[in-house]
Image 1 (spheres, rainbow, N blue to C red):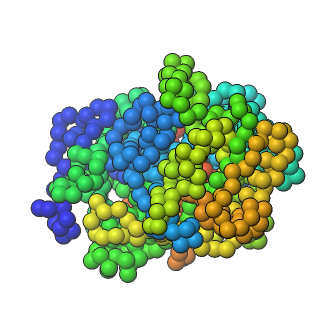
Image 2: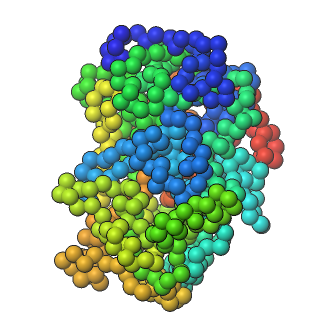
Length: 616
């Protein structure tokens, strides 16, 4: 029967004697039933599959819509532009037109392969401000204070620099964290760190922003090893892990909905055989059963999308699309994301990494391929800084981050923002940047946005992308925060030693306001801000009695049995920084909760001095 008929009973996946070891592409070897079915082999899913399959007495199925990794492009940090916006590796989501951003439509890169977005991101390891997690705890997320989640941040880490502070950092875990991977940072990056600390803007030198305090300026930490990207796939799904007989990893398997028997999740419906949604439109729906739990690790867009397609969501939204209601919950609400604004400066020759010639690009890639060194070992960002502006009186966490890239980029080059309906795209053309030559990009980032959006269904067709409405800059405080970040960035570039290498700031010459004015900065914040693609919050965690929450503090979907969500969508409030590290932590903590709730074996890990003792 056609897959579009929602009342059709899905057929069991045909059993094959071939398991497709070690990766089953196309799902030909899927068994009819497993103990745990994990949807999404991304940042959280790979960790969870590793941890749950440590117990040989349970069977684990990990399902991924995308393919296995494209090893060369994934492993080469500088190859991000060749992965994002390629529908083979990226879901290629888009937002609605945003009125407060000059009516621009943003691309939202989301990884679609083993490793998920950890395979296409900038690799930064940023845990967030400890206050983020203490705020979660005060808001009804019992067990999620910073002191309680710190062991889970440490568990999978392998920090490879000297004098690691073992109170806060881990050694010997699966995923390697290294200093900026290019070796010696660019001259401009070193100058930016020194000038930031000297500019009297509240940014002291900080040797480790993932240590006791996040505040200050630092060289970045990355998920990288020997000049190569470390994503959760190559870190947690090693050949040894894939060889476990109780773990089955399948690619090119698209989950269309969760199956329920009353209020109990009993499995998932899937379409198999392709990683491209347009090729799955007329496919037959098949079913896979879960004896213990269905666990959604599909991310802050796909998990709420899948929940709503399954009948779990706001009842008015489900009724609109004639989807039978399983549970009336605020799925898709509470959407939050980070915005960054691009301040561009021209610098003296030889101080940054800019190169636009084909010869130099070939040389860069060859150096990386042969020696794992050079410009291609970094995704761009070399330094970062954090501070609290005071613009949000009720917020105690850092609300501003400032990235520094020793090169010139714009929104077209980084592929994050599409053209507006009026035909206006980036504020500075690639051709103009090429004519400038050497320069740098300073990126003030809005970390604690007050603007909140939503994700809604476009239809009941699982191959039609959902509607993403982030409501960027709808709160006045968010514009003020970005303006404050631009002011701080300007102070830094006027402070030695960075001022010694600056030629000029590249301003928007089409603005009706003078560059020094407040009006210019406000308009520029709206015209030049782009997403840094850190969406969270769409299946909010919190107290069971809180009507704004979707999952409880053990990540169980409220009112339902055998269904959890384990990814960025459970965050009640976005963290202060890049979101990969917090998602790793969420998966580590979830694995212990799932093991405890199911009476499973728990093993000690390298960063734990003693055998596991539940801290929940």
